[in-house]
Amino acid sequence: MIKIENLEFTYGDNFNLKINNLLIKSGERVSIIGPNGSGKSTLIKIISKLISNYQGKISIKGKYLNKYTNKELSRYLAVVPQEFNTIFNYDVESIISTARLPYSKRFSFFENYEDRNIIEKSLQYADLENMKNKIFSNLSGGEKQRVMIARAFAQEADILLLDEFTSHLDPGHTDLLMKLVEEFSDSMNKTVISIFHDINLASIFSKRIIVMKNGRVFKDGSPKEVITKGVIKEAYDFEGHIIDHPVKHVPQILF
Ligand SMILES: Nc1ncnc2c1ncn2[C@@H]1O[C@H](COP(=O)(O)OP(=O)(O)OP(=O)(O)O)[C@@H](O)[C@H]1O
Image (tube, rainbow, N blue to C red; front, top):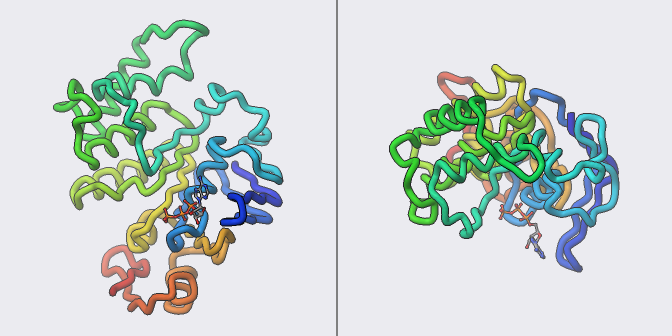
């Protein structure tokens, strides 16, 4: 469970994030949507301890975030950021194997049978077996995104934080990875918090959607409660046409 109480964070005079109360239960799959600059990535960065000079309290599994060491937190939390660091000049398999570091003994990392098994499975899940020896920096945007998701799987954390994990993916890989993440959360009771710009994917992906606006939670509810003409107009200043998904029966928005 992730519990946020009286959170406040400011980037200079530019931006103020304020969330009084937010609870995300274990095993929940939650999407965060909202216009550019509304604070979605900032919130993910705070939860993943990339930003720590905030006010208020955040706890994960009943323990305050600031009490976790980074290594300890990595066993609970895996992050797929929006931008990938270009220092990753290793091959795909080596990058995925770094996900096992939180489980290593002090000063050493010797891959054991369990590590190998999960690395192989993660490569397979993300359709990366045929490019495991390729150098990360030479991959396309979508291939890099798949590597980062495979790495997050290999980390075996209970909570997955995804910042637009489908943004570079083609429809086939979007479908594949959405289903994989869904299965991953449903079958193993993993908590998934995912930022989406694509409202339709968010609506299909999760039973709960949080809409951010100007650093605040503007709306929090089911796709049917959130994806309405009124909420979308107020959040995005955009007049969309809402239809029902013919198979999934969740709201979808048309331009
Ligand atoms: N390092 C920084 N220093 C100062 N301001 C920042 C910094 N990073 C982000 N901001 C500002 O904070 C605000 C929120 O940014 P954030 O990246 O959280 O928004 P977002 O909702 O994720 O946006 P997008 O949908 O465009 O990715 C923006 O106005 C942004 O310009």
